[in-house]
Length: 79
Image (cartoon, rainbow, N blue to C red; front, side):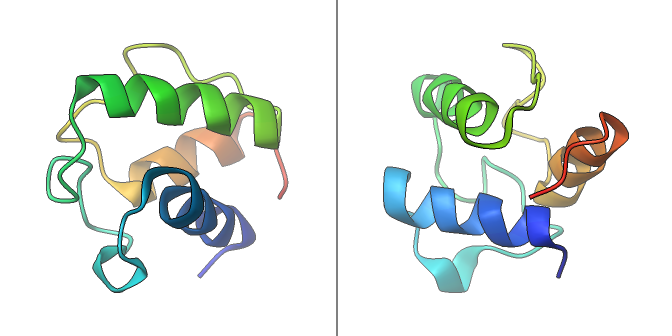
């Protein structure tokens, strides 16, 4: 698991109450039970905590954790 995935997991657990056992690289946000409002909140948290630039529509229900990690890493962001 990458440092960015570790940080995303930490934020999902602490900020949105997602059970850590559910969070894996291939899981989608929809699988985690996050609705559009929770995804907007998570986007803002990730942008602030990691200094990433995730657009409002990047994190959709069918987006996986791995895809999010890849997008963040492509920006040169390190956790």
